[in-house]
Length: 381
Image (cartoon, rainbow, N blue to C red; front, top):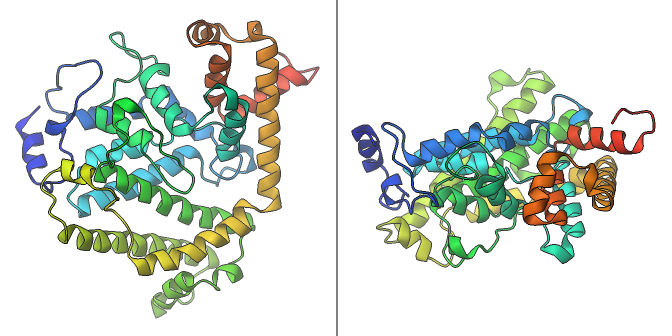
């Protein structure tokens, strides 16, 4: 690696994960002349097929509901932007943080969490389905881009970040090779919370745009009123659209600032001399203040009650589950009808795992098109 990379990493905090401390790759590779291992990981993720397909995978609203709403790809980019900002502010490794953020949803199914729930139900007696472990499978095996190794051959730390990603919607998984008893790096911890900040605030935006959320609902929240009270007088005449964007930007800034301040206070009380000190701790270090946690809970409760459990969202989710279940049933009954590439995977991993991989890799549009081809009598196959 170039001297510039070494010089940059010397500016990082002692507890940041530096590329010179990496546990390496499964298949050893020669270092790049001017890109760090984590920069190479980031670039491999961005150029992967799984990353591109996130553009047409559901976040909350199914893709055909409208072009405005977030998709898995736009969500991922927002997480990466927030996470990288926090990493810089805390003198952690921004390249590792960004790579983990860009990879954190690569294992997601079509139709968001409802798709994952259905695949987990279908595969319950055959190992189940978890999008974190599937994300690791994608980067380790299913991506086929390089002549010298399967998958993307990512660094140990990025792979650990994928399987140890944990939020309200994400469960970390135990992979012995990736030392489940160790705490994740602080870079991974940043991505966990950046993910929460991103989906809470963009779901607010999408919910208001769809009409499923009303500003009158949000005005009951202390955090919403706090931001409203801080809007300068000169902005009193803003259009509703501009006012919405200003409030959501302010909410994100407030949470990121609180996270930085609270985490710095926690770090100050610890004697962290290396990233291994972070890993030895029994609890995470990156966190909001208790005050911010109290602000955020009613907001998240409101999103759950008014948006995620809205009858229209539930209808979309139920429809998605039926589509995936019927696709799986048809494929299992007639695996010979599957494409040659899937047949090759089945020969290695078995029919159920091969079908599960195939469905998990679909976009919303893929799944809907497949459903039409298989069930609509006048649709070309």
